[in-house]
Length: 146
Image 1: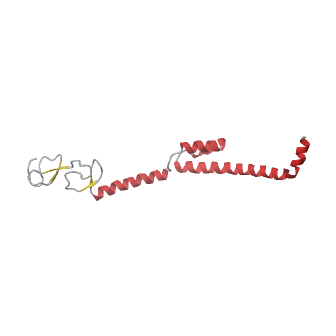
Image 2 (image 1 turned 90 degrees about the vertical axis):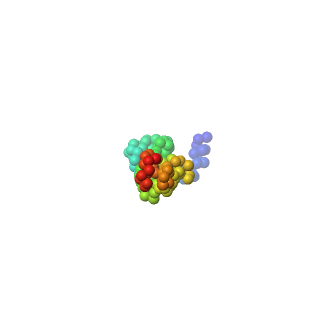
């Protein structure tokens, strides 16, 4: 029986061996590429590239899947750029004018209340009507006690 099966498979034996060798070659190249990609990605994100490359080398796709779950959502460069954008926006807001302390919407220097959230920003002088800071006891414009 085995001899009959061997005789039937004899014509496709070279193709079967070639297919097996190509699959093995693909697996080796894929594994090396996966280790290399993991090392580069972990290095960009600042999370121990040698450790994660070793994990992927030992556990292959399962190690890569674990890395994909626990890796930081953004690279170190992206995080730095985000921080710089936030700082630049804060400086721009401060340069453009004042903002409401409650809702951070832009307000004019002489607004008594925020038009967005209705928070009281300043008080009106009882004599001249100018906008004063809430903690001022005297109006600097007309010298009236508040």
